[in-house]
Image (cartoon, rainbow over all chains, first blue to last red; front, side, top):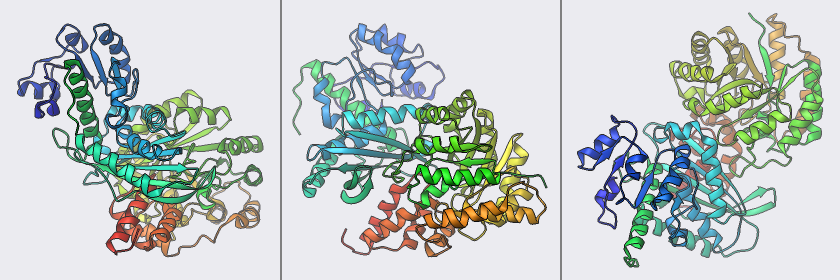
Length: 285
Length: 337
């Protein structure tokens, strides 16, 4: 919500809907003069003007919402791990799915790390990739806590599909340190053949710069480097990439970069689709 | 004093110390001895829990399912347990271990994050497993917080909750407070898992028993992550002296420790600079070998990495921060990366 209000893009925010009339989110939307409803998805389905819907419910709820939205021709930008539609990461494949009516944003760890693996993989094939996504305990809500399996499965799938890794693992870590830590991610990409290290590092640095255009707090922590590790496939070079995401502080505290990268990516996806619907030619950066 | 239930975790915590290299044959030999000696529970899995074979934690040479299978086949009286860390393992690996015949699942999380264990406690109970909650890095939180977290685990179906001194950073007063608080708050059993960084693994375990602990852990020869654990054979000897009849055969354990475990050790487990600085800074014990690797690669000291990890409040599973800290320390010193 804050990102749409703050940016002068292709979208207009017409409705914020939830299921709890007393929710803080709805109260904040009303404060900003946005129409709200506590009738959930029904309020959206009744409004023919709404073309793009950001679904931040839960995987279970989204699976119920998706067919109804599709039937009415509304684009669903799915921020849950439901993965009904194709995975989308703005820097990797946004333009591949412009005709899809449902796109999925994977997970915070997926948005932060799959483009980094893609950046390695476009230079040299990644045999195995492992992602460690670490966030402050305070920034992890009950939905994620009650279903860690879902995060692991969805993120690992995206490391393969978006990142291009042949084999993938994704592991979340919740750290309760005080003061709370910023979101940090580590990527290990195991390479089985000889490759140009400098080209890999340059490719990773350039995609990180692209991501920081729509997630301003996104940065690499130091340059990627190569470490040799014992693996089930022998002693192999492993590209190690470390990243930090600091939130914009629009609503969540700045340490919650994991939440910010989801809303920032959703905004970017929504804006490009809105431009596509409106027939606006995208300005090349 | 009551007779505690002893879990030997040589084949789980000790997995860190042998760099995840246990073979099915080694597991068969060690389980046979522990089982004959009368040890009631034997834990077998990757050191970081089921599915822990990763770059972050270290790849296993043999499939842990093969190791679990051999352990289940070999044990005549002992129950086989596995460790499970949510996020490293998922329901899939939990089900698989249950199918292979483990009887006990020990579910481990950082000691403030008990609410991520709910789905796994419920699944483990559905599958008919005995369940134990493992509150890792217990030194970082006061007794009151641990008791609250333990109560959550109890509400999800835990049969026992452990105070886990992952960093070997607790002294005896700290153990007493924490175990007593859990005993008071819970109607289920309470356990204690020690590490020896401050030379207190046996002493702390006895203190835990005095405070009412029902379950304790050991490893043959203390073979475990970092400074290692309370040696199972020493624990049994001490309990014998205290007239606490565990019924466990000390002679078999001593022989197993000397003849089966010592040959597997990459180096003697002693409280050297790395282990002492780790315990003193309150850093997770399985970080040790990863810290040594990073120290060598980036030309910085083991102790300074440990100190910084302690300051940053790293938790279990954050081996990636070791690299980050080493890089930053090297940069600060003007070393070329």
